[in-house]
Image: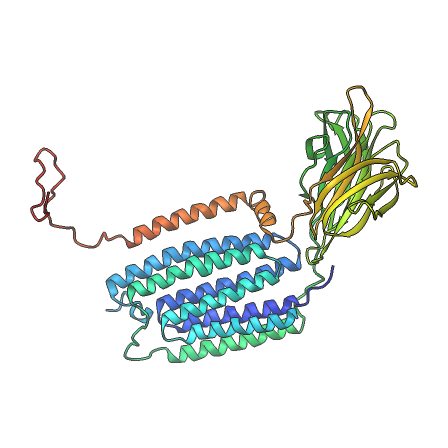
Length: 104
Length: 399
């Protein structure tokens, strides 16, 4: 079998970069929806690493796990956006700095 | 070429992720994230995962991000008005610094090769059964006492099945026989290695010369794309010691594909795709055709197994027959078939649990967003009590 032209290290590196960008987004942004999207970015970065390893070991299990991650992400988005909508109704804002429930 | 593509798409992915983080407008962030997801779908394609690439585009970029856009537009929350004082500013810079340090450390470790990654593995062995032996109703095939196929009728074949590598005793039984007590028709040692697809073909007659077994091994390489196909011919004619296979698609110009194929042996050759007429001749005798496979269509990048065998007639004579096993080569890695087969064999329970999770999420979304906290309507119930009678609202004309 010929060796793939792009080594797996590069995929893992790209995946790490994207994951860290997602972490930064979660920690630094104020907009709750942006925070949420950063979580999606992190999930995608991990998916990329899973698929890369899956090719490396010629094992389909990684693909299945990515499939399940995508499904769970869909469920998570449904619940999370519902939470954001509910919070927006009461607080009239989705700034996460404004969400100090016990402060005021 | 592939590396250039990787660098370009990777740069687009990183830049779009960065733009998502620094965009002030949430709509732009969403669009940049969609671009990022498209790049990742492209990487899935490069990593031999076409099915996941498709799911990524439809589910992620399509459904999930549209939901995000919808909620942003619904709430009118494109921009968060910055609060008066900026607290935790030291935390932000610390986080960025730590993240960068971590990133440098990880990339140094990866590039330096400290992560132990050996050569890419080959796909697990696959096995299938072709029954080209007439005389018994059906065939059961066992590997070390575990059935890989049951009730394979004459002229039939099974699909490729993944199996663990190792040495096995392959045994063929007449359908219904007990592998523990009955004697097998044929018994043979086989070795299953990674990256191989094995076809066990039962040939011969029940008596004189007795059943035979042809094991055809093909190398499966999911990384290789070719415009040719492999033709594997199996001689299952006990009375023909040596046969030739000729390509007769052009009757004026016959080409020898396989020369001098012994009984119970297989031969492999590489041909271009197209429609073929294959003729079988006794070795050296190019005038009397034994049997023929007419106008068979062969696609590129597949493996075609052609078994020349014979069928028992009611008067106990034998008629020559060609079995052309369909172009079902081992399932391509990462394709929809491969993923689907895994999903419905080893991952049925997780799949159902994920389905349950989606159901719970749906109920959760409904519970979270429906307005229990809002005050109830104080309007009189108009239609609640039928005994009171129904008065049409006065403001509706024509009612």
